[in-house]
Image 1 (cartoon, one colour):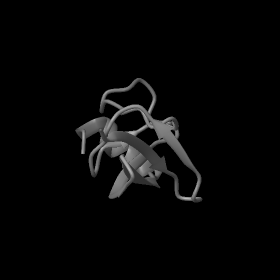
Image 2: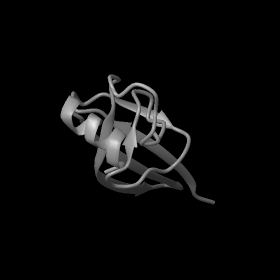
Image 3: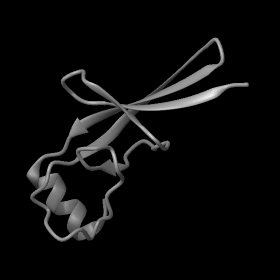
Length: 83
């Protein structure tokens, strides 16, 4: 039996376990939850997943999702266009 674990890795190196998989270029909030392009206020802390790394050892499959902080311009573009 293999258990799967998912982690988000922030730019400063901190990591936090999350309950679900993510994908590259997905935009997430401070807690690793996916954001929709039409959220009410683009002035929030958001990250874009830029890299995924997988490790496997003794019945554990761990996926690490590396996040990069989005700039205000990127957030505004994402809120307008979803890109």
